[in-house]
Image 1: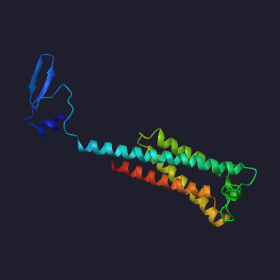
Image 2: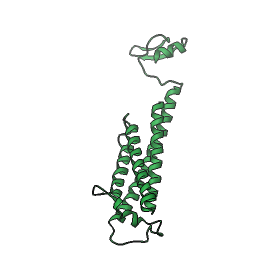
Image 3: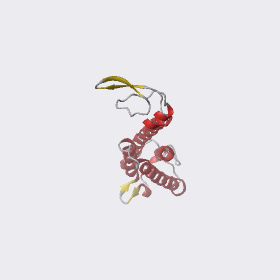
Image 4: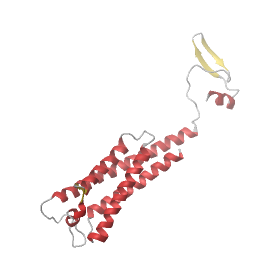
Length: 193
């Protein structure tokens, strides 16, 4: 870095503090003190801007993941509820109770809504704690796309097998779609840098 600076400003004299006192040092001699550069390096400004932008994207993933945990927890509560409610049961075509209590609401003994809560918690953790690691965008993208694929499968079951829609499930589909889009954006920005 100093060689580039001395090449760019060969006539620049820098004031140097030493134990013997002050004296001027010409641009070709290595400096021992640290002086802030007066010109900002454009590449560091861009990387700082990209880091800020990625922080915003990760924060959006955290917010959407928290919303996903809440929506999935509500669906899980509806799964275990003993009685029918009017909460999101509008008619024969829109009924959370029908969807959340169908044979498709459990996979290997685990409620689908419980899998949703666990998936959103995983996305929340990936977007919060290890985001400084290089592998985090890949893990976040893989997890988000797996969640999206699972949500699309469940949407297919709602549309063509059960012929009934769950509002909470559709909200969850919207959330995981947005998270997947953000994860793709984070991954592409990381590949660009």
